[in-house]
Every structure is written in C-alpha cells, then in structure tokens.
Amino acid sequence: MLAGAGLGSRREMEQWIAAGRVSVNGVAAGIGTRVSALDRVQVDGRPLRLPRSGAARVLLYHKPTGEIVSRDDPEGRPEVFDKLPRLRGAKWIAVGRLDFNTSGLLIFTTSGELANRLMHPRHAIEREYAVRVLGQLSEEQMQSLRSGVQLEDGAAHLDIIEDAGGQGSNHWYNVTLSEGRNREVRRLFEALHLTVSRLMRVRYGPLNLPSHLKRGQMHELDEAEIARLLAALEFQPQAAPSRPRSTRARPARGQDAGRRRVRR
Image (cartoon, rainbow, N blue to C red):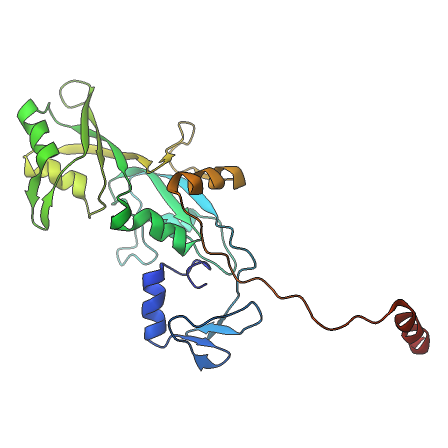
C-alpha cells in the first residue's frame, strides 16, 4: 500500500516499517500488516491519505543536460522534480537516473511497484542510448565492448553496439545494455580511452522517447498507453485497498418519510 501510494519501492517501505516510521491506528506497523481505506495510517507521525484506486500515473520527460535527478542538491543545480506536475497524496518516483550531462528519456511514476518492476536488476530491462564519440571505434574496440570491459565495480558489457554514422568529432553509435550502474555507458567508453561528447537515452524497456517531445517537455501516458506498458512488462500491480461500503441498514421508504415529517 505504501509503495502504491508512491512513497518509494517495496524494499524502501520495508525499511521504513522496520525502523518504526509507520503506524496504523496509533500502533507501530509490522511487515505484512493489513490495512483498509478506513484505517488511519501515519508515516513519521504524519497522516497518509490512502489511494482509492490502484491506477498508476506515468510521465515521460525529455531531460535536457544541466538538470540533476534529485530533490535536494547541495550545489543548488536545477532539479528535474521542480518541473513536474504537483501531486496530492502521492509523489513522483524517478525510474532510474540520468547524470547531469546526459539527456533523453526519463520516466516518472506514482507507483512504487511499477518503478521497482522497471528498475530491479532481475528483470534486466533494456536501456538504449545514442552515443557521440570523438573519432571512430575499431572493430576490436566494438568487440571488447560486447564481450566485456573491466571497470572498478566489476566487468560490464554492451548487449548491442551499432555504428550510426558520422565523421570526425560527430560519430554516433547506438548502444543497448540491461544494467543500470552509475555512468556505466560513459565508463565503458572511457575504459577504452574514448571520449563521449554526448549521451542521450532514447529507450527504456518498451518505452521510446517520442520524436515530438522536445528537450524540457513531458508527456503523461493515458489509460490505454499505461495498459499497453503493463502488458508489455507482463505486470499486474497490486490493487489498492477499496473503501468498504456501509453495512448500516437503510430505513424503509415509509419510515424515512415519517422521520422527515417529524423533523419538519
């Protein structure tokens, strides 16, 4: 429920619960505590408004260079979250990150479950990038990137690398990988002493950067687009708790009319 409300991933919410940050009806919650829409849930002492629906919102953003994917940058740089639509009772979760000098497709959702499905390493969601380098790679260098390069945090490789053309300082390659390590694409090229002058993410799993979406613009998926996304991921989010209907017996028509006459 906490993840569905957009507070974070399931793993993060389990850590919050274990740390005693969550209570239900004034009692500290435990992993697996059941709640309904009538329960009073608090996080860090603040009431949480339970979602009435499990419907997630998904936003595609064409991130320009010069923005950071953070809510609290100590250097005071422009933050992507400053541009997003305001929410009540939920928050936007960034699906993966793009560094300060990388542009392209950035996905936001209000569903912690969906964010986790898109980011968890076991699902090996593909990320595709357009990379501009200074000069042209040799066939041996391209093969090294496919077979694996040793980085400081372990070996890494590209699933696909294709020459997209260009000359001199404007040579482009399309690359695909299924990991999301910090600055992985840049570090792979740098390990071969190649300078990346521009890096742009053009696809994340089944979602492509729309051709009409200019830098700094965003597009929110409609219900049909979200349904196609969930189908492509073979993912069915857990339904949010529904608000129970009142079980109080309603008076018969005549009784109700009589009461109205008495009040008048």
